[in-house]
Amino acid sequence: MIIPLLKGLGLTLRTFFTRPVTIQYPEEKMVMYPRFRGLHELTRDKEGKIICVACELCAAVCPANCIRVEPAEGPTHQRFPKVYEIDLLRCIFCGFCQEACPYEAIILRENYETANYTRKDLLYDRDKLFHAYQK
Image (cartoon, rainbow, N blue to C red; front, side):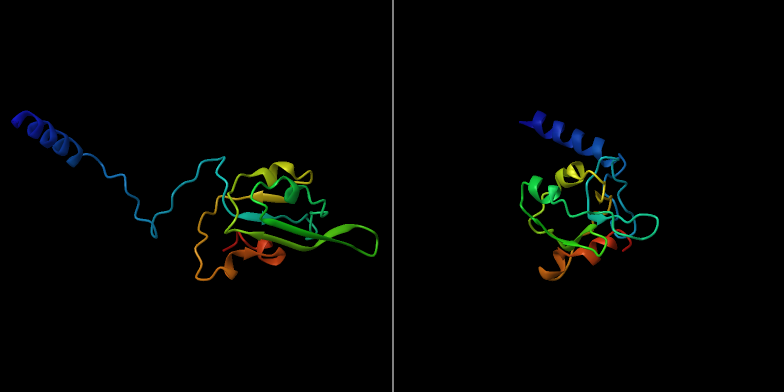
């Protein structure tokens, strides 16, 4: 009867003198692993033009069906996405969209802070995806 009590107290005393594992979140940020997949970002080239050609491979490979792309064509017949939306409420952050993109136009960054007050704020359109990582 007393032996389990002593074992429990021994475990408590051992862990009492160890360093805490808790991170003080707003002041300290977690260092993410290199292969962590966080918020999406659409990339631009050196001239500031959109790299995406609206091939819709990212939308086709997405298992959560959360990407919507509507292609358009410019005056010199280059394709670009007229509408590019990602619903972060449905996204499972699998990274298939990044792997499927032949132009590396969409990447998943280390940013994991996606909290918002409304559902509408978690629907990222093309303009919001350009500036997702700069927050």
